[in-house]
Length: 453
Image 1: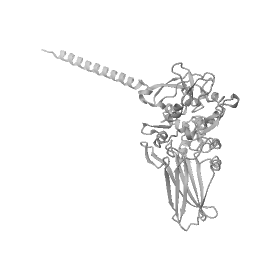
Image 2 (image 1 turned 30 degrees about the vertical axis):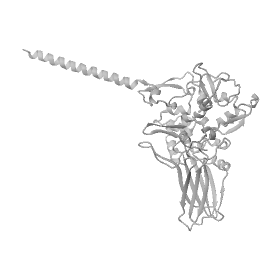
Image 3 (image 1 turned 60 degrees about the vertical axis):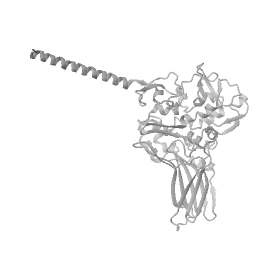
Image 4 (image 1 turned 30 degrees about the horizontal axis):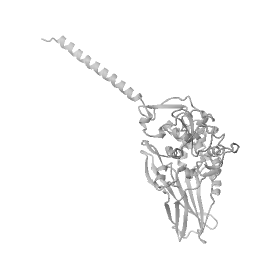
């Protein structure tokens, strides 16, 4: 017969075992949670096959050169270095718009920097992995090979031209031509150089609902079945010695290193170099016709083997048509655009795409409804827009995220940072049915003064 005291003891033991089991289960759950939440996942596992997910490994000093800085390369490759200093690549880190985007709390900074300062020597820290695979929680350790001078060089020479030999662990230069005796180790691999552009300029990846990279220039180029490379247009060929004259090396086929893109430079003082370094609009004003009150503008992508515009999905062409009276006064105006439309909230997605593929045309038909207007001429402009005013206004308002010197620069970005460039301008006289195009050189002289636009 079981007594009441024995029953109470049994119930107490049962409760104790339940409490102990619950406590152990809770402790085990916390341990598992902490392990899962704090474990370091390799970057290669989070972003398999993505070259942009990691910078180029630390580069040892080059024999015969020293640190693989652009400045050191420029001690011999003087003309190439001068061209590079005026390039978008050289301004990849100092770009005011990029710095504003980088400072946002939602920015995965280490990922963005992998394209804007792509060599590990340029980074103060090394990312060894991601906590629980979360790209907002990188595991960082100090980089013993950090070179502050290289950091400020942005997309520097070593980005494309220097790598580490897997057998000797020594740095070497990737060349395209050969047939010389440079002071540094060199391997000729033209194909690797030509393909390097796609690592950053041909990638579409969705990080989360509001963070999307969309760069399809390489894919657009391949779709044309063209035998051209990025270098064909963006690095014009030139006959010269690869190095300074005092080294007495032969004149040969080389490439300019200004890397001119859409004709909207990173600073106003770079405008005089745009045409010198190879800029020309991708689109051409093929025809401008006026019949009665109907105007037809025909634009053709004849000079780009990719879409125009390409790259950054927020770039576009603003097309402006203005009617002028006999005194040159504007009495009629209409606008349209060529580009993409994206919705960025709540989910980033492409809404429409009105860009011009290579070899294709865009027809803009305008009907001027007020026939009584005394229009004697029309003026057409194509403006390549990199940054909308509404976007730069928001950046100025959000400048508090930045520290000096970029905070002050963003606050003055209307005066410091070109938002757009007029790349085509043409005047049409109705009476004579004649058209006069403004020379590109004149347009860029005016672009350099278009502050605040």
